[in-house]
Figure 1 (cartoon, rainbow over the protein chains, first blue to last red):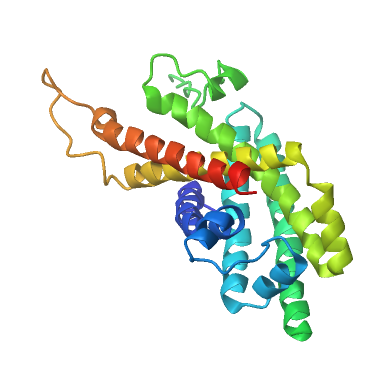
Figure 2 (figure 1 turned 30 degrees about the vertical axis):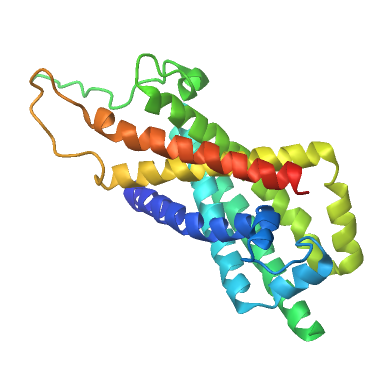
Length: 126
Length: 149
């Protein structure tokens, strides 16, 4: 794929992450402040019941899937850019590319699997 | 017949890994860029571990609770806060990078006639505004992390 296409998606991913990670971080780490001003219902966000409550919501399902896909792409593309700044042979560059792609895909498959299984468990439990 | 020796198109990276951080006399944006990458690497490392730790939820309540207790305690709490701070910085600085990439905050190109401004100088107000916003967010996060938990 053309480098400029990969770079363009890196930027798009950045914008998407800004929104979905903003939601995730807000809910998980600014929880007490948001609860104090009434923007979030009071609960322990790390309790298993809260995990299930989030997992069964379609909204969170979309947020988590967008987050895992775009954040893994953004992160691994960024890591790849840093590694490829070191002078190396074309073969070595190809190896770096493949290792990055395989690691990223493996993490995406596992992460998306956990999100979807979590969704199924939570909807069946309710 | 004259042979034309083709010039080598690439040159070795003289600074090596040091070039990741050394920015010479470039502006503050160059050093923010180095920090941006460092924060990005930290977030990526956290993110990879985070996928596996929170993936425990699919094995039931007991697995979830044991995963959560394995990453609890003051050291992990401070570590999590550092990730929060890194995200605040990386995300807000990223807004400027994306705006600049699409040429939205650089102003119109001008003739370099003294006294002139460069694109970097025109974007610097935004640079510092976003950094101040990041620091405010770090204080708000710190309040939630350490005074409300």
